[in-house]
Image (cartoon, rainbow, N blue to C red; front, top):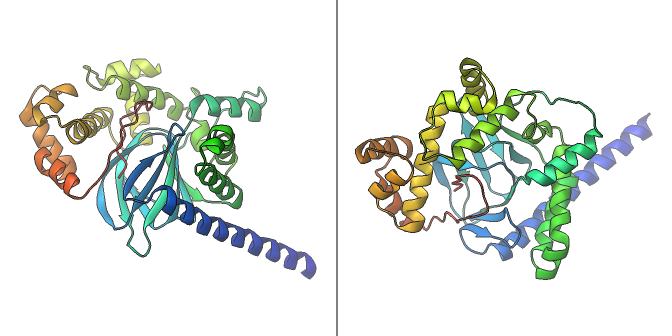
Amino acid sequence: MQFYILNILYFMSKMHCWQEANQSDMCDLLKRLAPTEGFTLTSLEGVKLMRWNRSLPRSPVLYEPSIVVICSGRKIGYLGQEVFHYNPQHFLVLSVPLPFESETIASEHEPLMGISIRINIPMLSELILRLDQGSSRSAPSTHGIVSTPLDAKLSNAVLRLLQALTSANETDILGHSILREIHYRVLTSNQGEAIRTLLSQKNHLGKISKALRKIHADFADDLNVAKLAEETGMSIAAFHASFKAVTATSPMQYLKTTRLHKARMLMFQDGASAAHASAKVGYESPSQFSREFKRLFGKTPIEDVADMRASLITLPSEPASKYVTVQP
């Protein structure tokens, strides 16, 4: 019995060392692949690298469905009364596009470095079919965001993805298969149900994700709770309750937040005026837009864009993404 316990402890220590070695190698690769602050887009669609050499205060963000792995520094997410830590020991999974608040803890000595991988819906569908083998399994309802311990297998897959990104040939030949493995590793992790439910229409998270896709596609249109509830096939009361359970906010507040994030991107990336951006995202009153913008971001549109430019904050444009996303 004692010999068995010693073997288990030895195996666990080796697994821990493996993760630490992966972390060190990942950080070295990210220093090369993302040498400057902000976001670095890669040649793999939906994969971007992040780096911050300083702490960033708690501020509103809007993430697309994604897997976020951090190798250095740490981030804290706030959704309603819940707090999510993502750091070298824990990765973040978002199964729906979700507005929340995020804080970055980093320094020159220990920069925030990590990788964000957009969840690939066709890839996810194929893997779920193979894993379920045609069963009628229905995933339990979950929140749209989870933070879970990073194990050695997923850590090693992310390391190999970063290694492949250093070579155009390896990215082209190996990149897709490594992304597939990463999706598989997350699906089979303790919190795998968080992204399995993204495609399920048998639980409230799957149904709400359909309404969220509608909001991100048609945010400038005259959407209301009745239209969104109809999209999911739910009653208005059931839809409203389920929506808040997933996103910690109401449907109309979520729509407003999405519009404001999109307007922010238009002003920062395209140089649009506040009046033009507000009209573009569906606001009829520029003054109402300015009031609600300041309520969310704590500054007027002009002040916010000026501060972002002075801070060299980057919001990379990703045409392939179906979602409005802002991820500092």
